[in-house]
Length: 126
Image 1 (spheres, helix red, strand yellow):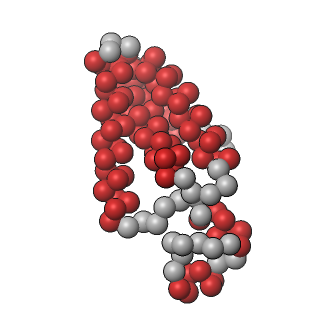
Image 2 (tube, rainbow, N blue to C red):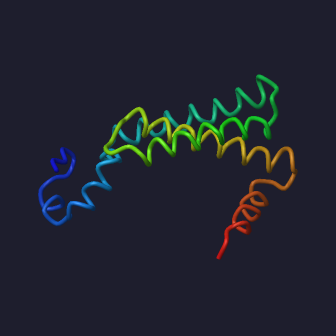
Image 3 (cartoon, rainbow, N blue to C red):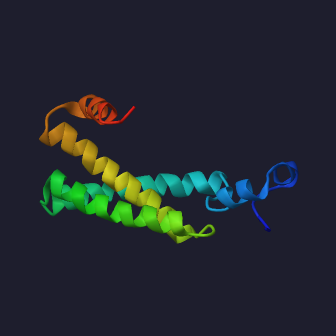
């Protein structure tokens, strides 16, 4: 399998299975971080647009973005190789659902961001 982003000794030390796993994510470069900042900003703005500007509220907005997130993650998992649009759609979906869920915990439930974090962590199964 030809991996254009694996270089030199890294490529020779990875087996085929590891190369296939890493073939679904981009190389972490300065361009990656610039796009990541833009994606995060877009996600936060999208969350606010739906919940506040369109007056849907945090709970409804979280539900909408959770559905988009679930579809994006499923497509990303099923992808056989790296597709930039699929990858970045999943990243944006993550930031929008995370933002609206945190805002719901803070502003609607009144438990703050720390309370939302503690509540979320307590829901994890051992």
